[in-house]
Length: 296
Image (cartoon, rainbow, N blue to C red; front, side, top):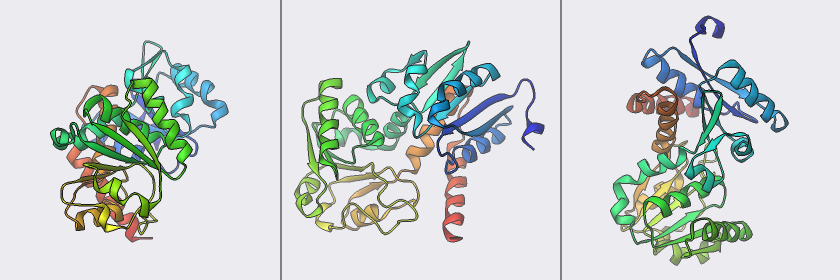
């Protein structure tokens, strides 16, 4: 029982969203907490958007240490925070909140996850052309990180809704004064050359996510080559169809599992000031997902 695990000095952590039942954050954070014998518990709260402000006041009153924030609250929570980090302010989204001395501090740890996922390729990516597929929240994090930390020469944004891609382009021109950025509609036969000329391709869309594992934003093999790095932020399945196609043409591939683990690790370390057991949690999560997928 949860009540049996909570004492007056237990650190309270949580994830909030609407809906929230799909979140794997309680699974991995409580596992990590148990591994280091920390007196903490990570809970899950389904919070309707109309109740967000009231809920944040409740977290303060109850003495929570921190919360993770997921859809649809990542943007809406910002006006209710006392301080927002640089990356979260520019991206316009918060996924981690720490609570100290009755104040709420917002961060975006997805940025850290992206940095760690691509760190081995930093010198290769520098001054190169990069293509980002998607124009949602994840793409904002990716584009911010590419501009701030990887010094990419040019960024292409591809999206089914060309207007959203154009809006995102204009957003980073204004927010970060980055002008070498273009938008294109997602039309696979027309983007082969664009993709093949990109040093790095990043999929930020849910296309190919479990259970739709046979989907990919493109299946045209000529889009990929051995000089590329292809990164898919999806972590379930561990290797998406996109990554399989890219690998078959010699591209080096990066799955979304490390990004997911590293963004969680950064949240954990902000809250508890202790190192997250990355390797054990990664093995644990992969096994859980494999069992889940096999049973369906």
